[in-house]
Length: 240
Ligand SMILES: [Zn+2]
Image 1 (tube, rainbow, N blue to C red):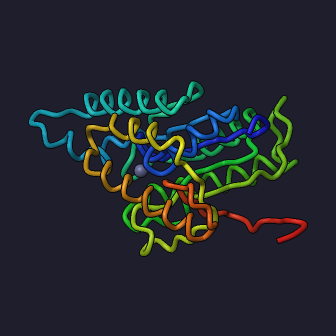
Image 2 (image 1 turned 90 degrees about the vertical axis):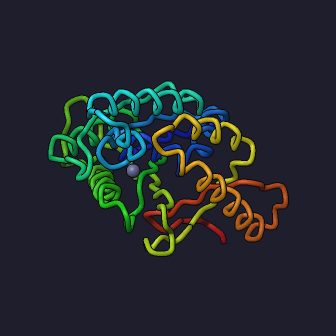
């Protein structure tokens, strides 16, 4: 793990926790360098419970979401994280955001990027982020995209998060990461999100289900909990 550099790009304040919290904590515990970029706080689209309070404001929801998300990031062990505070629903990605992501990839030089997968049936913001991160990675690896003092990167691995409703989002799991040892941290981090309490049980059940799948596929009976990801590219190996 020590040579791994994991870049996590999350559309909204909580996505990285629900979908990859156990994996992030595992990489950090293993000595990898991990950087998180959260593009938007999800004030408009992913804070429904907070908007039920009378007199609620955009600013207030934003502050609460930032507080929850930062607290969760710290629980997972993250110290390198950035919040870009982009408007969501629809997520306001533009050319400047694209160039900024390319710059961050060149600067951090990840061995692995994890972000949203190609389709999330209920969340076009996630699709848009996936598309832009993919584009940024290709630009970062292209010698003709010149950024002063930022040498071109080589091809990194890229994986997509499992979306909320797998079966209707054309998601196919390529890799299961055993998160049994960091599952408690994931639960603690999930519990920071008062605006999305309903998701805690959902993603606890998901981790258990994926743990069951991972045990069946690998034959490793010690796996209790897992997260699954879809690879953007096929794997190259010298043997099966
Ligand atoms: Zn989201």
